[in-house]
Image (cartoon, rainbow, N blue to C red; front, side, top):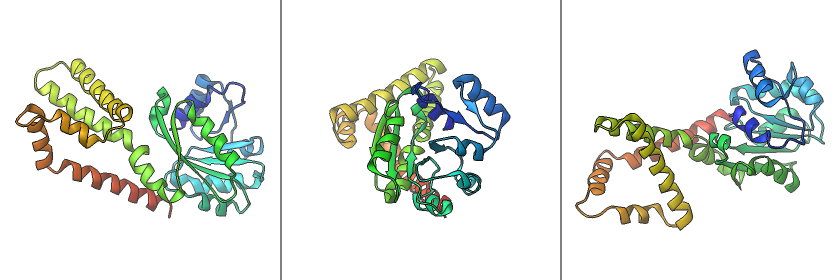
Length: 253
């Protein structure tokens, strides 16, 4: 996800972006691909940065906050993409009135098709929120949510691309089993998914209604839907997304 964000931030060429990564290999990658100035430790980066993006795993947040908090002041902005980590946790860990924006993007950000939800902490202003939104708006859709809904957002959108990759993977395997080449099965499946998503958004229609229009009584689509229903696939997806939301909440404890 850090790479996806850097790919997006790269469009802000008038701004100096810096990075610190514990992996020497990844540091070389970011320097080579984006030409970012590399700091050797998080404290040095925090001492020399006006805005800081925390693009680390949730389990690493406490350690990183301990490293950077001596350098932080109220004129800096913290933007965190760590799943499950609340703005209150970050504010409390820092122990200062630091503005914090919590963000949940997803990986299609890399190709200009991201979906990003944002919420602001106790000390963040509307201006802070708008600035954070501007960093992600050039590469997709942004929306503002209350923080109580950020764990469901994480489950639905942050993890969401994986669900569609999983579905496309299954469709491709089915196509190959039925005799199609893997390349044709992939093109058919991925473009069908893209078209279906565009119909939902552009027609502003409920997916149930669009599905009903495709499902003729006694037809091929009905045969497929009947199998999915018999295996309770919809319920399985609901339970899966609920499990992802629960895990997001657990990560914040």
